[in-house]
Image (cartoon, rainbow, N blue to C red; front, top):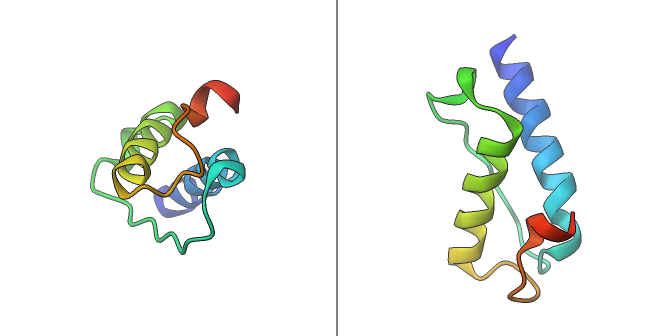
Length: 66
């Protein structure tokens, strides 16, 4: 059940961030903290990691426009 919830969270995060991503491959690997994570937690961490990689098409904050 935890794995399915993690999968749903990551799908939603990808759905929210996809319009702003450059054409890149993205692999999400759940961590041990997933059972207590909220959508906002996962979105924040994914956004920060993708920003560090330069994966967004522009420099604006993708969370404010989703």
